[in-house]
Image (tube, rainbow, N blue to C red; front, top):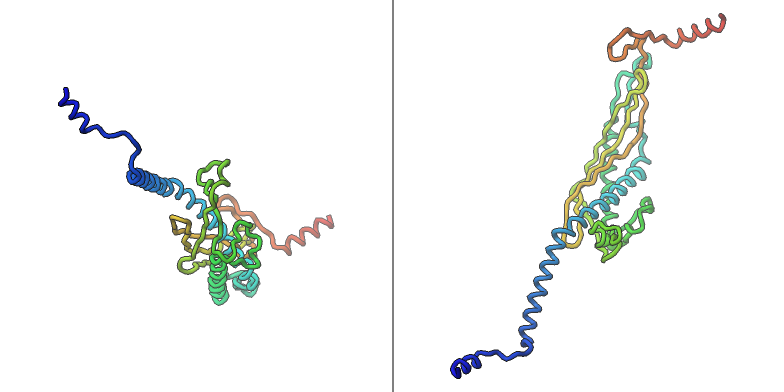
Length: 264
């Protein structure tokens, strides 16, 4: 019994607080563990939600800047009627419709220059006079921040949407502005046509938020104007080539019939 008693007494550890160095090491390990777990949580759950919101806000600001550049500067210098050249024969009937290539190229070049200028100003936090109606939270002069996202918006909870620290959003343009003038034709009655001319703008941007960056494409369409083209009215009209043709009298014949009806 004494032997076992001595053996047990030799290996019994005295009770008491852990040494300070052990407490520090254990605390440091827990701190590193929770920090890594928090970073993973932000990366996997919060970051995609924040990036989605940041992309929406950046698209809104960039599209507004593009539209201001076109409607405020480019459209004031051109007339859509000058862009479309309509050729007529000796009877005044339309034979062909063509674009004015000189003015066409001028509009494209001016669009590239003005849109690039506006986007660079927005990117730098400088607001143009024509862009004074941007929402107040998007006016961040001199700090290159176009928007702040409350961290609570990433939770998709209406009660928490405006809570938490505000995440700054910035962006930068990538490459050149890509404009293209498109036209669409809409029939209006017999041989009458509306020619709608619009300019499509596309530009690549890169969006930045803390911990993440993503490439996106901003595209928008700005109408330039409408041209009405009046064609020759045929003597007979048949819808789709089916059924009997309807006789369409010239205006002179219609006038004679009106006078005859008045006499009767």
